[in-house]
Length: 366
Image (cartoon, rainbow, N blue to C red; front, side):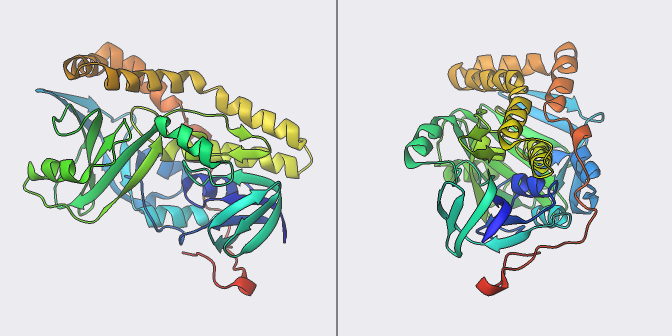
């Protein structure tokens, strides 16, 4: 079966691409939309506002507290408030503005423009890989192994801890080269740990961290996330989200850039479908757009590498310095401008048309 566009992955990045497309579009996703959460789901409030998804917001957070060794820095986020969101409501809200067929299937591989899945094979004029760090369309076994050095790993649980501030901890003494977080939601907090050095043995340290508040570990979710920008075009593929390493280094913020670059990618592809750009020109436009952000990605990557290489006391000193008035007034606006939410488009605007491949059974839906 032939499509204008085939997108592998229907989480933040894939849905963002599809939201800007008209035509015959196929979304391939192994899980039901809004299921299989791996993200901590904390985003700038402006993302939910611009997308029209305020009904997914669980808690608005206007202060950030960074704990480093014996010091504590409080950052006022009033100008750039963050929020925690319900993953399923947010994804289903994004899907409500998508005109595409959604097929629940695993990608097995591809040969040129033909994608093989567990539900059959499909051809697309344009292919987009938004499947996460594994990059199921772009990744080969060897390239996935080489990519591991640019990955961080995190896990998270939900606990009955009250709070009204974003919390980050460094130099915990229980975690080598990483950080912990506490993101309040409506009924508690999402509490987790992340390692910059691909250490996935985090359950024990998480239990120790929770014990500080007398909390028990509940159900865990999480996984790998990228920490280095890579080329957003690979041969004839468009890559978006973690498949292109677009998660922000140092902080691990991935939702905002996934949607930002995803919508930009979708807009370029629509111009190709409209005949305004050739396929080759469209690839160049998208690649140029992404790589314009490379300088700030490198700055964040450098800061992350310092956190890995420097002794903890120096890392704590640099964190304290970054949170002082002059430094913060320089750093925070540039960080927020890296994936500027002013460029986002509303997710809603058309009825949900997650059509079903009825000849092959029910597709994922909300």
